[in-house]
Image (cartoon, rainbow, N blue to C red; front, side, top):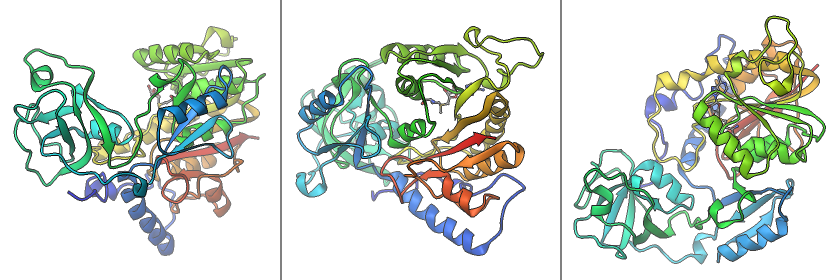
Length: 441
Ligand SMILES: C[S@@+](CC[C@H](N)C(=O)[O-])C[C@H]1O[C@@H](n2cnc3c(N)ncnc32)[C@H](O)[C@@H]1O
């Protein structure tokens, strides 16, 4: 099967540029430019980034020590410190020319799309992701790994999978046989296939290879958007949708673990993960489980930040609003089953979160709104809506501006369109992501 040209069904492709607001523009030339961008974006999403980004917890570890460790772990590829962000290491994957041509084995396994994505980004094959393995395949057999793009292969499939939606992604060595993977009443876990070569040439690298709390494999825009928040040690900062806490730990590090950092998330199980992440990375954060649309004091009573929500208006110097979103920016993304209803469900919640965030922000305070998705409605149109709705919000040009410009088709002025940070095929080789920096005047 050739690489897909879009992860999405045709009806979803058509919705990505939809505004979901009655305020839109209808310039034909701008529509054409958006369509050209979309075509490029969809193909790009299916491919793997050619670099891995590693944020180093510089408050506890030396960047140079971690850099040496990365170089020791990977035998090929170049490691460099990001020219703008001294806590970010970039591991450039070896180029095709320096890697041996991948030859398919006669033995095969089939994995689901999520497993395939992880494999292309450097993971081994974990047991739950295996769908099919040939009858008689033994531990230590060499094997080729195929992704089931159409999601039609039955669990436990035992012969060669004949499907036009089957994509060759890697070679490896079997570590668990069919009985261990598909035996009755088993909930298999652990590495089922050790991957030796990938079509993405991404090396096998993960956080467990580094000292605990030293590194986080974070996509570049997720790191950049926290730097954009202009964090300083003595401030009072709110991370409104914080779990699993990757950005919380970064904020705490930039605060030198001083000041007051409040991290909120709605889901109890995710709050546990958030607490665990904060512990692992030595973050100094007050963690609360709450619905962030309801954390603003409404009855005029005094509120003390350290006791948790609700909070008084104008409590925070900085707010990170890293909202729940349709998450369509993942890369590589070989196939997505997102539905129209799910895609359209996020905008109302994102607006509600804004309605809480803006009153909580102090005058002259900064707010970063971010998503890991690509839709116009959740990104540029949300920023345009916020500027129309909150007269005291202004858009600020981040420094540096590595993302952007934004898409056409909203009420954003040309200057504002250049200020918003849309990450895609024309700037950073990472995932699809968006952020905007606001100041309250
Ligand atoms: C994009 S994720 C945040 C990722 C996080 N900032 C990080 O970098 O690790 C969005 C989070 O919002 C949380 N969430 C969803 N609705 C919420 C609400 N009403 N109040 C607070 N958190 C909410 C979800 O549980 C999820 O953990």
